[in-house]
Amino acid sequence: MSKTLPRRTLIKAVLLGGAALPLAKHLVQDAEAAPMVDPNDAVAKSLAYHADTTKVKAAEFATHKPTQKCANCIQFQGKAADKQGACNLFPGKDVAGAGWCKVWAQKPGT
Ligand code: SF4
Image (cartoon, rainbow, N blue to C red):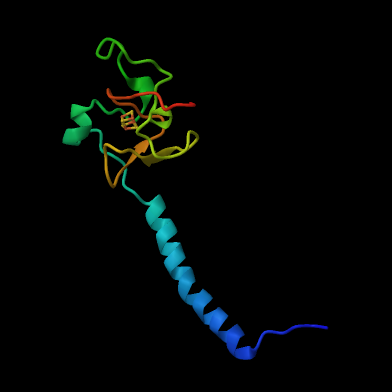
Protein backbone atom coordinates (compact mmCIF):
# COMPACT_ATOMS: atom_id res chain seq x y z
CA MET A 1 0.00 0.00 0.00
CA SER A 2 1.59 3.27 -1.05
CA LYS A 3 0.87 6.51 0.68
CA THR A 4 1.02 9.73 -1.34
CA LEU A 5 1.05 13.32 -0.21
CA PRO A 6 -1.88 15.46 -1.26
CA ARG A 7 -0.89 17.81 -4.11
CA ARG A 8 -1.66 20.92 -2.01
CA THR A 9 0.66 19.74 0.80
CA LEU A 10 3.41 19.03 -1.68
CA ILE A 11 3.10 22.48 -3.32
CA LYS A 12 3.17 24.21 0.11
CA ALA A 13 6.28 22.29 1.10
CA VAL A 14 8.04 23.26 -2.15
CA LEU A 15 7.06 26.93 -1.80
CA LEU A 16 8.08 27.12 1.88
CA GLY A 17 11.34 25.36 1.15
CA GLY A 18 12.03 27.77 -1.70
CA ALA A 19 11.41 30.76 0.57
CA ALA A 20 13.49 29.38 3.42
CA LEU A 21 16.53 28.56 1.30
CA PRO A 22 17.63 32.17 0.59
CA LEU A 23 17.12 33.04 4.28
CA ALA A 24 19.22 30.07 5.40
CA LYS A 25 21.90 30.95 2.83
CA HIS A 26 21.93 34.57 4.09
CA LEU A 27 22.31 33.43 7.71
CA VAL A 28 25.20 31.12 6.81
CA GLN A 29 26.92 33.90 4.85
CA ASP A 30 26.50 36.30 7.79
CA ALA A 31 28.03 33.75 10.16
CA GLU A 32 31.04 33.41 7.86
CA ALA A 33 31.38 37.06 6.94
CA ALA A 34 32.36 38.70 10.24
CA PRO A 35 35.13 41.18 9.52
CA MET A 36 38.54 40.46 10.98
CA VAL A 37 39.87 42.59 13.82
CA ASP A 38 42.30 45.19 12.52
CA PRO A 39 45.50 44.93 14.61
CA ASN A 40 45.76 48.74 14.28
CA ASP A 41 42.34 49.37 15.81
CA ALA A 42 42.56 51.17 19.19
CA VAL A 43 41.23 48.27 21.28
CA ALA A 44 43.39 45.76 19.41
CA LYS A 45 46.46 47.92 20.00
CA SER A 46 45.68 48.33 23.70
CA LEU A 47 45.52 44.53 24.00
CA ALA A 48 48.60 44.04 21.80
CA TYR A 49 46.54 41.84 19.46
CA HIS A 50 48.67 40.05 16.88
CA ALA A 51 47.07 38.12 14.00
CA ASP A 52 49.92 35.61 14.21
CA THR A 53 51.21 34.42 17.58
CA THR A 54 54.56 33.45 16.01
CA LYS A 55 55.21 37.15 15.29
CA VAL A 56 54.96 38.22 18.94
CA LYS A 57 58.30 39.58 20.14
CA ALA A 58 59.48 37.83 23.29
CA ALA A 59 61.39 40.95 24.34
CA GLU A 60 58.14 42.94 24.47
CA PHE A 61 55.90 40.25 25.97
CA ALA A 62 57.89 38.13 28.40
CA THR A 63 54.96 35.91 29.41
CA HIS A 64 54.04 35.00 25.82
CA LYS A 65 54.57 31.42 24.69
CA PRO A 66 54.28 30.26 21.06
CA THR A 67 51.65 27.68 22.07
CA GLN A 68 49.33 30.48 23.20
CA LYS A 69 46.90 31.43 20.46
CA CYS A 70 43.33 32.64 20.10
CA ALA A 71 42.13 29.14 19.18
CA ASN A 72 43.01 27.86 22.67
CA CYS A 73 42.01 31.01 24.57
CA ILE A 74 39.02 31.03 26.91
CA GLN A 75 37.60 34.09 25.10
CA PHE A 76 37.56 32.41 21.67
CA GLN A 77 34.10 31.34 20.55
CA GLY A 78 35.17 29.14 17.64
CA LYS A 79 36.45 25.59 17.67
CA ALA A 80 40.11 24.81 18.31
CA ALA A 81 40.74 24.02 14.62
CA ASP A 82 38.99 27.16 13.26
CA LYS A 83 41.16 29.59 11.29
CA GLN A 84 39.09 32.48 12.65
CA GLY A 85 36.27 33.04 15.08
CA ALA A 86 34.58 35.45 17.44
CA CYS A 87 36.31 36.71 20.57
CA ASN A 88 34.34 38.05 23.54
CA LEU A 89 36.57 41.12 23.58
CA PHE A 90 35.82 42.12 19.97
CA PRO A 91 32.04 41.97 19.47
CA GLY A 92 31.00 41.63 15.84
CA LYS A 93 34.50 40.82 14.63
CA ASP A 94 36.59 37.71 14.20
CA VAL A 95 40.11 37.10 15.41
CA ALA A 96 42.58 34.74 13.78
CA GLY A 97 42.76 31.27 15.34
CA ALA A 98 46.54 31.73 15.21
CA GLY A 99 46.30 35.19 16.79
CA TRP A 100 47.19 36.30 20.30
CA CYS A 101 46.74 39.21 22.69
CA LYS A 102 48.10 40.01 26.12
CA VAL A 103 44.98 38.86 28.00
CA TRP A 104 45.22 35.35 26.58
CA ALA A 105 44.05 32.70 29.09
CA GLN A 106 43.99 28.94 28.54
CA LYS A 107 40.62 27.51 27.56
CA PRO A 108 39.96 24.49 29.80
CA GLY A 109 40.41 21.24 27.92
CA THR A 110 42.70 22.66 25.22
FE1 SF4 B 1 42.68 36.05 21.09
FE2 SF4 B 1 41.96 35.46 23.57
FE3 SF4 B 1 43.01 37.83 23.02
FE4 SF4 B 1 40.56 37.24 22.16
S1 SF4 B 1 41.23 37.43 24.32
S2 SF4 B 1 42.18 38.25 20.97
S3 SF4 B 1 40.77 35.06 21.72
S4 SF4 B 1 44.05 35.84 22.85
